[in-house]
Length: 489
Ligand code: ADP
Image 1 (cartoon, rainbow, N blue to C red):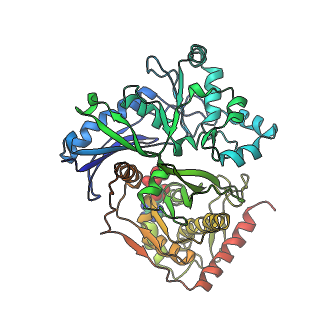
Image 2 (cartoon, rainbow, N blue to C red):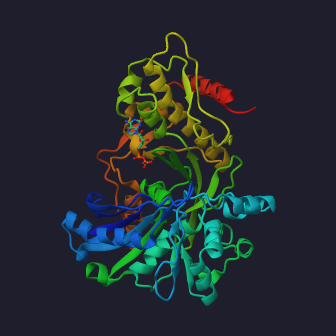
Image 3 (spheres, rainbow, N blue to C red):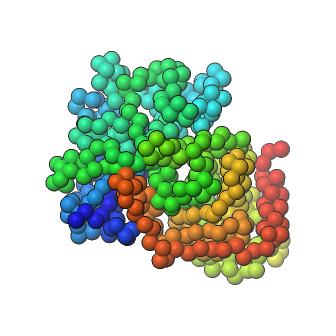
């Protein structure tokens, strides 16, 4: 009896395979680290062959750790680091160059050229993104012009470009499937949100051909079989999505107005906006959440650069705390922030301020300020920054926020969760599931075979707003003052 789902999670720093039982429990997993290459300042690469080895070596081990056979696996899902580009040869299946990773900044110049040609409004309107090196298209352009093997394959017409999902799909199906899921396609800067196809204007400008790009397929539904070479029998792949979109699905944020925030080093927030792409007036990104059958669900995406990283800085930069968990004890040891606000603009400020020159600030210091107030201000800053992005999302989408689902390392802090619920005046839901991205991919895989993978709700904690709305307003006013002191006017 097939009673489990497999999730292949090809992340930036590691590849993992996770096994979920049909009641939504994590039954087993295996993980392997991925080598990071930094050939020049600002450049980040991965070895595509290592991605395959790393990912595939965890398959059998995950099954072993869960104590299940391949025959127990009903379907598999794939989720992956987004935007990273692999180029390979369609005849041999071998990569032609190292993968250029999403963090890589080598294509800033070509992005500036696109801007100076006046293409930015077109890009924003049609792809939902901005002309930034983060996205895949300019990385492909760079490979075409700087990697001999890539341009030779282009001349032979055997070139295949893809994001990591496409690279894995190709190899898992032994070259039978050359496809990418729509949520990954939407991060390339070549995908047109309105036609739901590759965009001819951008293809032409970047010297790209459709033949070098994968077919765009729905995230949920059958996309191919994992070849029996891997686990001894064919396993259908029925869910594929980029990591943030998979996490949104994992949280069960399937209705418009539902939002998830992943609190890690930074924050990644996605809001389900339903069946229409919503363009942002505040510099948020418009993206595809997922597609099932003909139905495409869209999302607004925003990020906070410094979230948990502010706590790391308290620990490593200021030596105010010994470990992240101590921040909760200290924050609770004072009644309030004592008028102290921290704006952790260590790397500039994103939405809605967009001031890349801004730098951090701690305001409101008095003789009565203690280290507890400063630690508390750092934690509170994560909540204020979340509020700022959610406010933009709400204004853009016209949907009231229903609730906020959270995951990521900093959600271990219950003080922060309770403070956030009060500030936002909505419930904050913290599931026990720590592997939301992989769980989302498994959930999609289940849905792809018309099954449901439930989230175990024992362990789900819901933080109800306990702060009066007037107090939330007052705190936000203090935050805005601190922001005014931080940004250029
Ligand atoms: P990433 O995936 O970005 O590496 P994680 O989801 O692993 O991040 O979360 C790690 C971050 O969470 C760190 O920046 C750390 O400072 C923060 N963090 C961990 N525990 C706590 C805590 N109890 N309170 C506040 N922040 C925490």
